[in-house]
Image 1 (cartoon, rainbow, N blue to C red):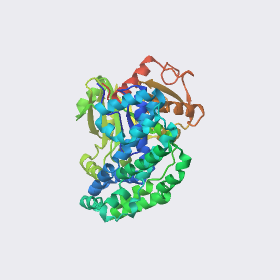
Image 2 (cartoon, rainbow, N blue to C red; image 1 turned 135 degrees about the vertical axis):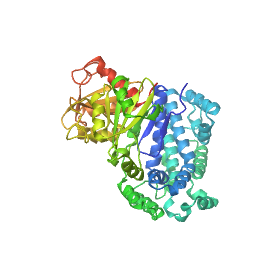
Image 3 (spheres, rainbow, N blue to C red; image 1 turned 135 degrees about the horizontal axis):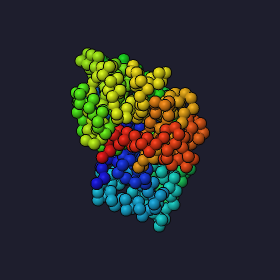
Image 4 (cartoon, helix red, strand yellow; image 1 turned 90 degrees about the vertical axis):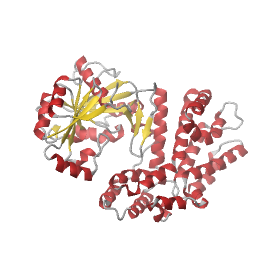
Length: 499
């Protein structure tokens, strides 16, 4: 049975894609769906509010209702645009009939998605081969995404900040129809769709040159997010949180967030493979995890020392600062976080150890030793604060490929050998940093051509260790024996908690 979760975007810099349960076409459609969420988040006012508040609620959740309200009142726009792009993808690659079949599937089996796409069906009907109205598929795509962005670019910063301080005040604010039509994306999109559908229907064609003046008027001054608009958004949120006990940290976080220009064509590369599977987890005692390391089929995963707070602000494990302080006082010297992934029992054991115990665990382990890349000391070519005595380690990176390029080049200071291992609907990039250290990065198949191109064109300080065809075979550097391949298979199966 297929899992219900195909992909996920949580207002971050990455989309998580289920690479296990579907074929390439469905995965690519899901990547596009989640990518549109990222696009509409990073390039719109409402989206950037969601992006910034999502992190701030970790510091101070007094205004979490703001995030809930922003998501609720922009969800229809986000999902309508995302499902629309899926439909466009199907029409491009499989034809109108396959799209129509997909639409009927949604109508019967996924009423929520069907509800989102429903206002756009009349536009997609223009792409029917027998349609009397001439529509170019690229121009239709551009129009709908533009209207979605316009809907999400209402100037929130001109609203009195008191409106957002209490949920009931916001409810009162949107009880006024003028405020709804001016600021609420879901309502703004409905109005825009009706307007442009009537224009197209009346003229019998979609001509963006003819619509240019109308679109510019609707875009207004906030259509393109620039540094000035970003500054206004940050200052507005700082005013809301000005009395927070964490205002210094919140302000510092805002200051670190910069606008980064991303080519729309590159957005799918910001997807990260995810199985959406979960092993059971439990705490462990010293003897138990030592025995597992010696005898079980699995991996020993070193996450890091809780005294190094930056290690725990990642997809692997997040620990808030206030919790970190409590943990430090409770754990004392046992501040090193280690886990064991038992592949046979589908179970994860967690253990807090001191420096000596951690070193002993690594020393006795017969299982592959996987290390959080943030716990790696580049200068020593070893784990921070721990001497592994040349024991082989695998640095696991949980970032997307575009976010990992600089990291790879900082680790691969000399030209390193690299392999790309193919798995079902995903790949594993393996960089040989040294005889003892391998850097591993999972990435989606849609990013393969970019990764390969960057290797060949020396964008990365690496060179392929395999044959030109890229087939996974043994080599003299990384996959020296068939057993070497099995180690990476085990690591992938454990990290993605595959059954």
